[in-house]
Length: 76
Picture 1 (cartoon, rainbow, N blue to C red):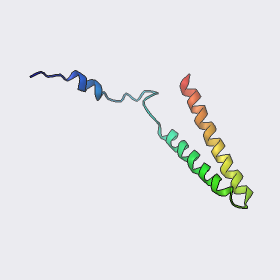
Picture 2: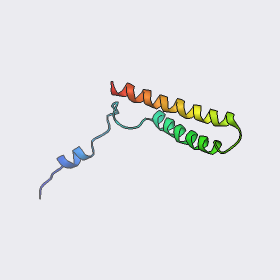
Picture 3: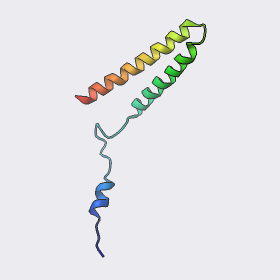
Picture 4: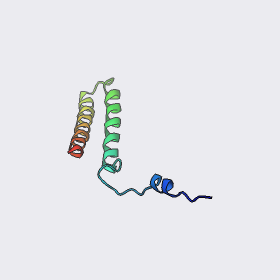
């Protein structure tokens, strides 16, 4: 009977919280804003109120820009 704990120890290594350890809360919120505002923009495009359509589009563009900036900053 062998006691091989090295494979299980490396498979369940603790998360050190480094810069590439996963998706942060702010990134999850930004992705949610992008998806929800894009859907709202799609729904508003069938309506008559141009202000709502522009507001949803602007919200989508700002959130997508912030995600792109976070991605570029993380790549440096």
